[in-house]
Image: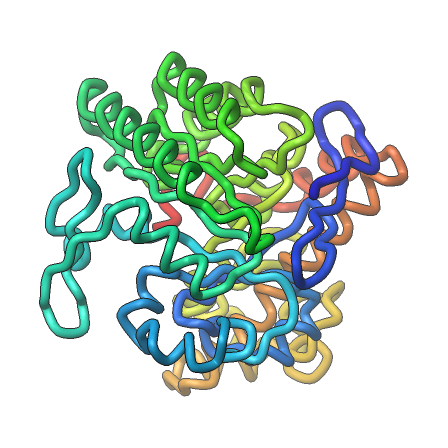
Length: 376
């Protein structure tokens, strides 16, 4: 289901074949937790260049509920998206106090954020939900540890992740033609990361995701963990770095051999005035843009940059007009998708390292430089 086309050092392009088409790698998936991206329509996602999105199976099982999705036969029919859909298992919700009640070897006890009720989900339950929802790529249930806890705690989370992964792969129905990805954990501990990546890789998963990163550990530790994990993952499996979506981190991760990304980082930044440009992230709310007649990014061809000035977008943000988030989201997602296309082209033309060097030279990290950060 995955074929490598071009390589330059560790960076690579390829094709991931799913039931709803071929997705060229490396690629970025906008977050569509409830079946839609934040304030961006499906038509706009297609215009932006998105060929895959990721929804959350656990959340969808609560609302609209499995009965509704079954009535439409699958999530593609329900949301009217005919391209690739990944479904997350709910492992990330373990980090949230509003969702998690408790977890153990048997499974996870989630709180329903809509009505406050508590319900137990086993790994087998999650796989059944994901299969019935009908995504193209489903994720195994994993135990995401909080960063900063003891090594013993993270080792136990990793042990449970492995136990759940074995149970997920055992009950997965390959006849449904859905791909299934496992998730490795291990925090920022080298031995745990390597052990987990090797364990998940040796199971019969179609791809391996790197979980539990981008949650406060900082760039140095994050990329150490990425590098340690990738060394233990087979070359012919798709490598998926979950939850990471800043331009500079995407390009660095691609250079280490990552094929797939998802993150709410582009839209989360847009909601707070953070706009991606070729010279770095700017805060469009700053007074210096009040009279600026130029587009958000001189080089951008998105519908927002084609039509509006920084001054107008600044005005929308400063007056709290709801449409500001929509315009910011469209621009930032377009920027990331365009970056993915530029990355692919540079690898195909064997000039990725040059492209990476030039991009990072121009892209000023500003306030994020050398600081701890979190995508969650």
